[in-house]
Image (cartoon, rainbow, N blue to C red; front, top):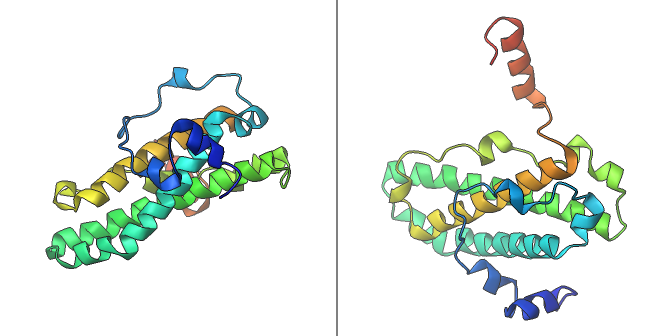
Length: 196
């Protein structure tokens, strides 16, 4: 058992999988702005119960999703009609992307807390939460035709990603300009009158 096990026990959970099995009470909603203190710093956040809870929830959700997609989800996807199977593939990639981004962000914050990374380095754009266009995008039409477990994982991963997005914005400032190909296309569109 790892060092954060007492957090589970204090909350009445045996392990991370017990937390991941709880239904989300905030499905698809952004965390209200009043839930995060405006004076929150990276150091105070990574040493807080909020961080421990978010970290535990994120890692448990990663484990639960991997088990589902490699097991029961694979079986369920085989029985879907072609259109639903394509939607399943796209939405399972969205869940995976959200959770990879969330887990990476949480691990960077843990590294800061543990002294393995300087806070200034962790706040650089390359360590910020990424893939927002994909992760915050709307699900495809016909989502109700997907297996219930995948729908639940979509809701939970969306909730987690949105909360971490809000934390990222509070700790490091609002969204930085989009980088990469999307940023270049946006810049070209603005330069030639097709900007936002």
